[in-house]
Length: 116
Length: 116
Image 1 (cartoon, chains in turn orange, green):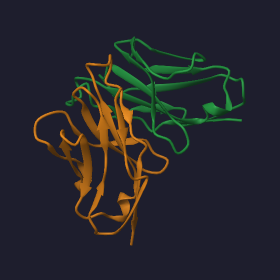
Image 2 (tube, chains in turn yellow, green):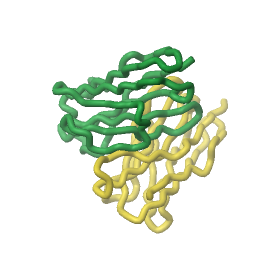
Image 3 (cartoon, each protein chain N blue to C red):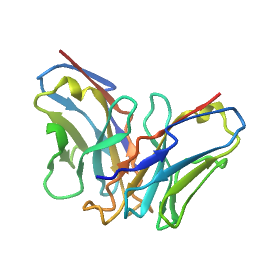
């Protein structure tokens, strides 16, 4: 069965500093990978996704992620964070067509705390 | 752009009562997913529907049932509510007409259920 591990439960960082949120997955089949952001008391917003092709994917709000098949990782990065980036970030995997739907398996989340 | 609509946004119930959560997908999306997010936890997949048929089932209790109607909206019915059912319930939709693929899910704001 597939699983997602987010190694850091919380990442504190100063404003305008770079940040990397780590995500590793476990699957014996090809996967689709996603990063979602959840602001307090809100739903999940898609940041970016990897389906195939170029391993470096760019998303909204200046975020990007790199798919590394050999290390089974999909780390999220941003070169300069803002206070408004403070939120919970979830990495997720989908393994269709091995499953009968594109259901998402989520990691436990990483809280990004940006300090002034 | 139209987003996923969920109602109600907040719901308070007593133990052993029933609750019905509604989800209205993005127009022309044919797939609906339901997830449950407990306090401080990652979202867990419950059930999904494609073209009004159940397509996949996750860790959904037997006390819960769901369906997708002819207009593609979906309802999650929860009976004999327990304290442990208190959570944020997300609906997500996807579709091949969205400009993205069927694999990309768009989440609603969630329904926060509190069972007393």
